[in-house]
Length: 460
Image (cartoon, rainbow, N blue to C red; front, side, top):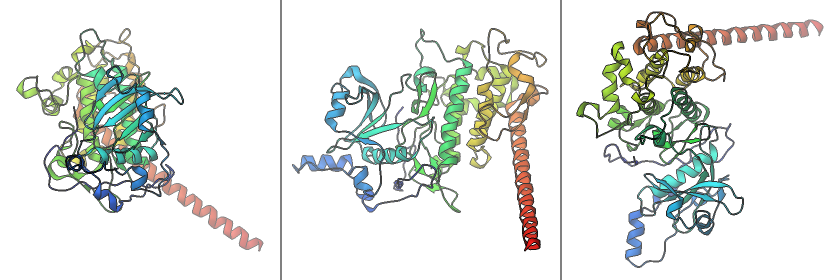
C-alpha cells in the first residue's frame, strides 16, 4: 500500500532537516533556504523536454554543507554493480517512492537493500533528504540502519542493512495457504519491539520525531522476527516549547492516519499512537487496515472492531482465525485493551507510547505454550500458566514505567474498557509515587547540604 495524501490540502509541507550532532544531544531544527527550491519531477521533465542540460539535484551535503553526514556515499556505478544492474531477480519490492533491490557491496561483501527513488516522483528528492538526515542522527535497535546513499546526478538511492525476513505485511496479511501464520508470542514480540522504536522517536529524540507513516509494510524484520521501523521519508520534527502540534500537509497511508490529523493537518505524537493501534489490531485480527474485498461493514478495520470491544462475548471474533484458538484469552483481553486505547477518536485520551511499551513488554514476556495452556475460550476460574500469578510486575527488560497491573478479578474486569481504566489508574499512581520519591530525595539532599554547611561553619 503506497503513500499518498489522505486528503487534499492547500497548505505546503515544510521540510525540517536536522543538524548533525550526537544522538544524546538535542537535535536542532534547521530549514535552509534552498529546501524550498528543491527540484520536482515535473520540473525535471520540463527541463528535459526543452532540451536543457542535465540538471543537478541537491544532495544532503548540498542542502546542509556544514553537516557531518555519518552515512557513506556511493557512486551509482557501485550500486549498479551491487544489484547486478538492478536485475529483476534482485528486486525485493516497491513502495510509494521507489523500488527496493537486494545487493552485495563489492568493497565489503555486505548484503544490503538498495532503494532507488523514482526520478519522476514529485516527492522523491524531499523524502530522500529527510531520510538521510534523520537516519544519520537516530540510532536504535528497533530502527533500520542506513549504511549510505548515492546522489550522482539526478540518481537518488538509499542503502540500508538487509532485513532477511521482509516486512510484517509479508508474514501477516494475504498469506498463501501453505505459509505458516505468525503465532501469538511472535505477534506480541513484534508489537513490543515496534512500540520501542516509536518510544525512542517520541521520548528519546530531542525534539521528538513524529514518524507519520507507521504501517505494517514499514516494519521490517531480521532473523528471529526482530522488528525495525523503516522508511523515514515522511518523518517530521515534533512540536517544541509551548507548541502542542505541528501543522503540515496531510500525508500518510489511508486507514492508518489519525482522524484529527486527516481533518486538520495538526500532527502530534498521539497521531503515531493511533497508527500503532491500527497495526496492533492487524496483528491481533490478521485483517488489513483497509480491505475492499470484505463485506461493506468490515472493509475498515477500526470501524469494524470498535463495536466489538464493548461485548465480551464477541472478543473471540477479533482474534485471527488462523491462530485456531492458540492464544491466551486473558492475553487477548489485555491486547485488545491496549489497541482500543490507542485508536481512541480523541487524541488526548490515547496513551503515551511509553505506557504502551510497558504493557506490551509484559505481554511479550509472557510465553504462551499451546501444548500446556488451554486454548482461546476458558472460564474465569481456569488459570493457566500464562497468567503468571495474576499480576504484572516490572518487565524483565526494565522499559516503560514498570507499573503493576492487577489481573485478578472477574471476567468483567478483563474487558478492554475495564482493563484500560485500570491501566490509566495504575499509571497515575506510578507517576505520583515517582514524584513523591523525587521530592523526598531533593529534601534529603537539601538537608545534607545544610548540615554540611553548618559543619564547615563550626569548624571554621
